[in-house]
Length: 252
Image 1 (cartoon, rainbow, N blue to C red):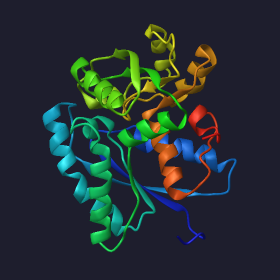
Image 2: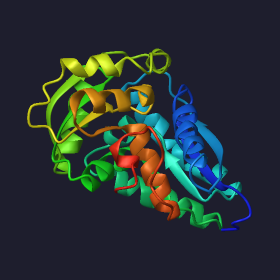
Image 3: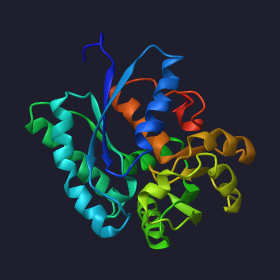
């Protein structure tokens, strides 16, 4: 890419998502305070109001259009920022989605690396060597069980979970980012290698990550932090940003 301009981050987001365009830029802006690279952010939206299988499937079908739109802007990397939409399509679907969307950009004469927040959560946990985790999710319990099954199919055992059972995606995004710092206390973390403070990119948790790490003594990630890590990896940049947890400490 032209190093005289910022790295262009493309985000494919649900229409009701209000968190990915705040937490990912917040992490990368914090990184700008300690490292030289600069970033700009560009989004395309897929219609989704309630976190149901039907709306998630319809939304995923719209992701190709988003990838084409973002490739028109010649972004340097794209992040598909809806974990549960990918996971609801079946085990391992993040690989299929990433390959298909990359092909869409190539067909538009702008081949672009594509990552998904679902794949990023898997990849981030595996990079840390986390084989057993406890998770917090805003979903209805059947969707949380689906997320657990997806992770376990990737070799990551979920030993406990908290489901907040909030179907309205706007309500999920309106939650206090510090709330997971209390919610994690409801989890069984005995024998866990890591805690997932938010297994949903719409549920804010960035402010809680360092608090939970300090209180629990365990590495803590979120879907948003893992997505940021994977975006930096795809760009070939140092995967480090302050106050975003162990994964973004620069050790992985």
